[in-house]
Image (cartoon, rainbow, N blue to C red; front, side):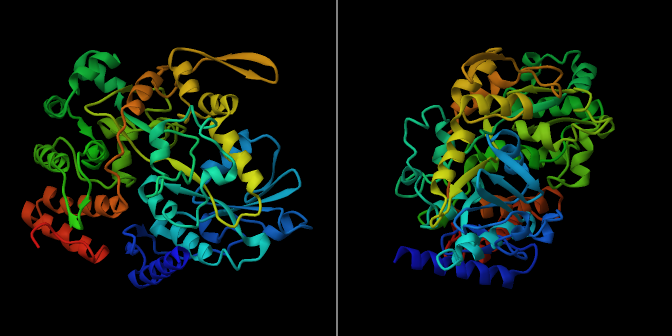
Amino acid sequence: MKKKIVSTMLCLTMLASMAAGCGNDATTDAGATTDAGATTDAGAAGEAAGTEAADAGSAAVITDPSKVLNIYVWNEEFKSRIEDHYPGYTKIDATNGTIGDVAVRWNITPSDDNAYQNNLDATLLNQESAAQEDKIDMFLVEADYALKYVDTDYTMPISDLGITDADLSKQYTYTQDIVTDSNGVLKGLSWQGCPGVMFYNREAAKEVFNTDDPAEIQKLVADWDTFNQTAATLKDAGYSIVSSVNDTYRVYSNNVTSKWVEDGVINIDDNLMKWVEDSKALVDAGATSTYDLWSDDWKKGFYPEGKVFAYFGPAWLVNFSMAADTEGSIGYNGGWGATEGPQGFFWGGTWICAATGTDNADLVKDIMLKMTTDDAIMTDIVVQDDDFVNNKTVMDGLASGATKIQREGESEEHEYTSKILGEQNPLPMYCAGVDGLDLSNLSAYDQGCNEEFQHAMKNYFDGNATLDEALELFYTAIAEKYPSLKAPTE
């Protein structure tokens, strides 16, 4: 019966997505957002992936339909981790590879306009009746919508794969909390942790504060009141403290003391209203702007001429999203520093789920174990890819300066510093931040509520609405997205 209910939910999601059109979030009965966009065929990546995909059937001769591993992803990150670190993986082309006698097919659908979820939903609905070689074996999810999938029968319990609590003993608890269903069953694993810090412009720090020492900069941003005072000093020197009010949003939203929805009523936590108050004051003072994340204007601060002092994010932001590989950028020249900032937080992360109905359960288990628990592989990911991995032993070792691992009977010692951060080792502050994460206030409504709240408050920050009018815009948007929810005044 549960599967039938889930199927109905996903069907409604697809219909709502098509009705909403591009750029609009559709809703499900479960309260999680789904994305509108075109889907791709289950067996091969579509043109939307921006990759010239070879025909999946011609990449390798398939004599046994059960020996096809179909993996659904939205970008190249996990694929690159498998290609670089999973033992025995052989790359054939952009969307095909092999592991032993198993053909691996990557179905890559970008998450723009929620196309990835739309494609995944449509394919999961057909999972039971799909041809053996077309069944999804593994798929990836993000924190903002993980509950939408783990709270269904379409994801396998990790224990059903034969993975034990002892296997996962080195992982950070919060990474498991995100993919634990409403019955307390663990339904996914991640190779990474995403605790966040504040990345600051070292040259700007020396110019304005006569130091770029992380401990000294931390004193200037130790709490939000101090942070706002420092913003005024930076403004007088010609710098924005952050590129946009949206840079600080996740720091505030990760430190709420209540959920977005309480007994069917929309609830705005006091810490979110603190973000509104602080952000309005900064915008009115000309200390920051209201740019959307990932916009060209927001990205200007990746370069010295952008005159932005800081960005907030986890390791993946500074390493992969701040133009660190582009000559002339601050990161390219090792010009960022890292400090804790006013509050600890996390942002993002990717989780691996095993699809119910997979005919490659043993291989899925092995991939999960090697990519999320193997000390040697996880050390390589940190050292070679500048990622923060989901392994307390490895991270604590590298945070202390060096770690030893055993590989093929020999002991290896590894040290870590970040070139992008001027050879700083930020891992101690990452480790301190991840240990303090509290995700007890996560809910299935987070993605939609967070997005609409920021959209509505932009009108207030830009002077196009009063605070009450902006709040009304938010409640109206949520009523459209989640019709079963009520505004607090109703």
